[in-house]
Length: 321
Ligand code: AVJ
Image (cartoon, rainbow, N blue to C red; front, top):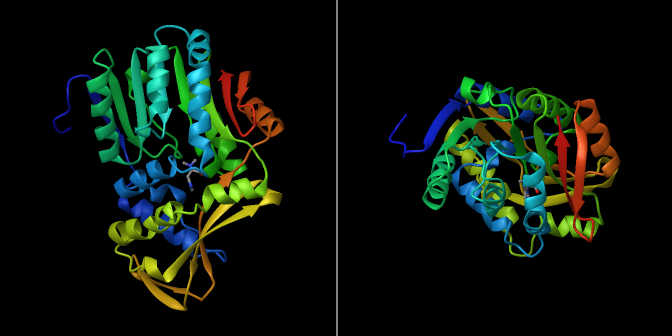
């Protein structure tokens, strides 16, 4: 552990470089080539995502923040005192601040794959909330996770998974994730989940293909990240960003479409891409209240409350273990 400020501890369970390589190569070997969406989030990617949340077309963050402002006290009342607040995939966002202020937990456990971003955000929070103790985890939350004992033993946990990040999982992955969360949190704990709801295709399309091209830059950033971490030779100017609304699967897909026939070197192998062929970089599933109910039950959660904005665009779901 390097010099960490008072009030901040760190646990580390990041995937090894070898795992990243095999995961990426596996996706690229499929008929529809895919890249794992979690590799968007190096430091630059995290910043670009922050910029996305400010876009007029990207209603998700704004709507969720509105719901947290409106119902934060309600959430805090239901969760009660002495909570350990565990955030899956922490951002630098105002969301966690709203929840911290309403709940005043004993401990905040941000978990994120980007170590630098994690430490920088924790430092900012400690400046503003001197009463707070933070136990940050540098982890890939899509994998099974091993908590330090002090955290594992905490009885009143609140899991927080905002931002519609669960939408990046396939339904099967989301189910498995929810079951693991249920195990990690333990009986009597709560889980607060932010999900985007299915809606009109035009609204979804615009949210993922904005007019300023910020989402395009975010999508292409995955190539830069892989160039650095896997010594790949992607040239982002040879790809076009594309968002595709897939109605039958209730999801928005992001693709990087090759502008030419090209060959790419990556992790010691060669990848051939035809003109017009795409790398599928992200799924963003959109939920229905029925699918949420079903998913909660199969993971042995009870849905305690669902809050929605007036337009029904977005939902905050409070589950009890
Ligand atoms: C952070 C995964 C929830 O899917 O809406 C934003 C990421 N992708 N614009 C989402 C994202 C394109 C975002 N999540």
